[in-house]
Length: 111
Image 1 (cartoon, rainbow, N blue to C red):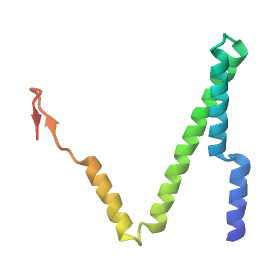
Image 2 (cartoon, helix red, strand yellow; image 1 turned 30 degrees about the vertical axis):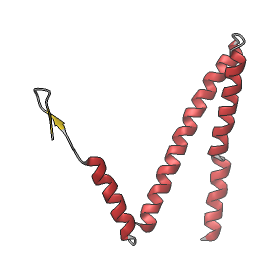
Image 3 (cartoon, rainbow, N blue to C red; image 1 turned 60 degrees about the horizontal axis):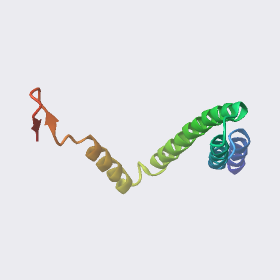
Image 4 (spheres, helix red, strand yellow; image 1 turned 180 degrees about the vertical axis):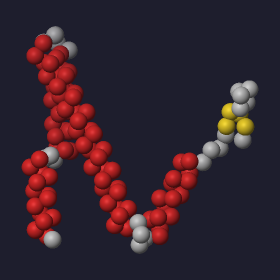
């Protein structure tokens, strides 16, 4: 099982790389391009900026998926055995879904 886990980690690194480092690198490049573009228009830099913005959005989606998967794995790992974890998750959801006020057809807020 350990060999399989190591193989998956190696595959992940070779396919996706370190998305946090990639995100930092793209942001540094975008900042540099923005600084250069303040001195004048450059078609090459504008195109590069466009493609880097697209790459940055892609990295943000990958990062969001990573955090979603990590939170889901915590639920799978601790959810059934840890009642404190389950209770905390339930209370957050309940607080988020609670309706405190509602507006009627006349525009009045009701509590």
